Length: 304
Image (cartoon, rainbow, N blue to C red; front, side):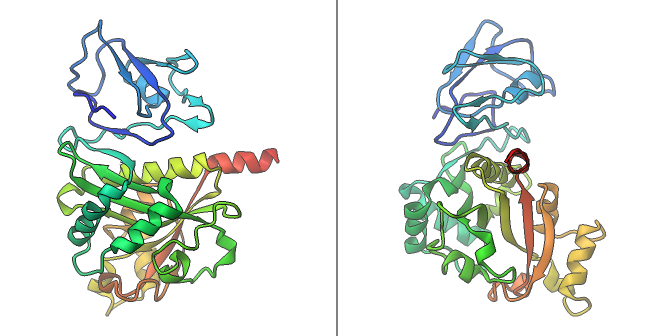
């Protein structure tokens, strides 16, 4: 993996599509770019969307097929893997998302302690099980110094095998992902997302969610289901129900640091789950059952 100056954000996964970016004019939007008009840069191990590159005045050439994609609105799909658009937020963030490795375990635990200081972090045993059961579903966001500033853990489940009010412990197999079912499963379950407090508001969470959507699409899953925390609820729990609180957040009448972000990421609230995480005091143990539908799954269903 090579990070190069001038492109602070891109999403990199192991199924990467090798692309060559050919400079064609100065990028719009005020981004300072170090590329000269005559310079050609090869991204050998990262995913870049042809749609994004064209919109920013670049031409992309797939090194596998030699196909050139420069038309706006085109997104390259090579060998069944769809290129992912980078999330351009702030040059100071300078981070990328990649698959978690065994060497990241201590860094992820340290991140969890910073992100959720009043909740138990992942254990080493749990994280090893994640990597054993579904390594592709475990993502980390790394800054320019190699420090882990975000992580996302997920597994594939057969959603109709669970009660809609099932707790986090039940769905995740007490956090070890023994419920991961790559054969009969049809849904990606988002077990956890954490972002370093110092990196919040800089697009790290959006990169991690983009990574999850890419996994769901690559595995031809119906979408993503998760139990979303509502950490703003404890402040008003004495005056309103969790259902009323969630309703006001959905209507835009109230802000919740987690749910409001998830709504912006395209998730819909299906219902409120009591006792989802009993030790989540800021959420009073409640969570929202949220869902993102994979638009490509709907197309496949209609075709079938």
